[in-house]
Length: 148
Image (cartoon, rainbow, N blue to C red; front, top):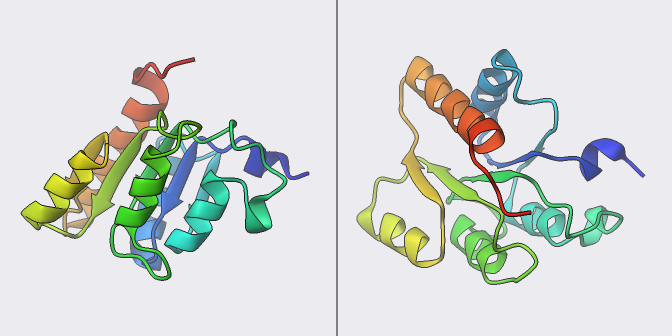
């Protein structure tokens, strides 16, 4: 069994390799990426979250400390990932932060209706994006007190 997949603290769900690389780099720079898993579509995110498919060896109860979720994803969109994660007793307490390029009010409203913990529109500028990701990682991994 792969221990790195068992001990994921951050699940990054991002199909854009450039945005993923920037996020990972910002988290590494702040020593927050040791237990990060990057998945590239919503179907893989659901497999990880619910310990199915190639992640069936995981324990669904051993979820990440936070999910950074893009909304515009291939296979299964981010809203559906959010809906399913927050609709299941085993996973609804996992904090989900939508980190997306969307600035549409309906996406914000729908995300909060589904139980998102935070909604952040990705800044276009590299430095601003890196700063936000680092602050997110710091808050959700070190400051936030999750339920036991």
